[in-house]
Length: 217
Image 1: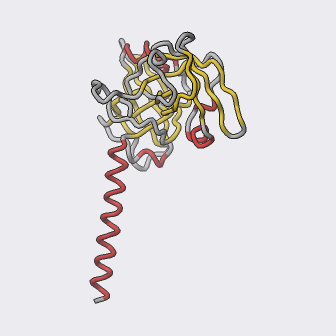
Image 2 (image 1 turned 90 degrees about the horizontal axis):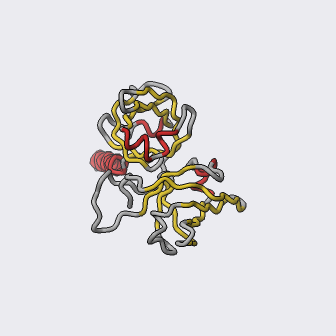
Image 3 (image 1 turned 180 degrees about the vertical axis):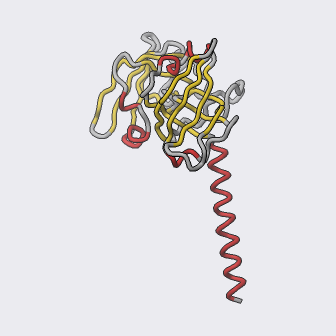
C-alpha cells in the first residue's frame, strides 16, 4: 500500500519490449537505498515489483505486464522520462496522503492549466466510467500523487473531468509540475468509493431476490 506522497523524481533508463510485456529500468537513488528483490515501488502510481536492483548504481528493474501496459501510461515512457517514485508504506510509517493501492483505474488527459499566484489549477479529462467515483473535496491519485479534488463535472456532462490545485511543492517535486496540456496521466480513484458501490449493489440484489421470493410464496 502507498499514500500518494512522492518520495523522489526518478529517470527512466530503459524500456525494453518483450512481446506483450516490457522490462523497465529506472534510476532512483533514494528508493533504491533499501530496495530488495520483491520490493514494491510505485512508478507514476503503478505498483511494480523489483526484479533486480543495483544499489551502487541507484537503479532498479521491474517487469510490466501487458495488462498494466494497456491500463496505464507506462508504455509511453522512454529513456530520459521523469517518473514519480514511492516505496510501499511501512507498517509504522506516517500516513501523509490517502489509501493508494497502486492499481490504476484508467488514464486521463490534462486538458488545461491555469497558473495562480504560487499554485496552478489543473483540469483532467477522465473516462466517463470513473466520473461517479470523483467528488468535490474527495481524494484522487494522479500519476501517483495524492490530490484533493476541487471541482467535478456535472453527472451528464461529456467528457467528464475534475480539477485539482497544485501547490508549489507538488509543482516542484513531481512530474505534474512539468505536464503540459495533452499529457496522459494514470488515475486511481478512492478505493473506498468502489467498495461502497459494490456493497450497495449486492445489497440491492439481495433485497430484490428477497422480494421476488416473497411474491412466489
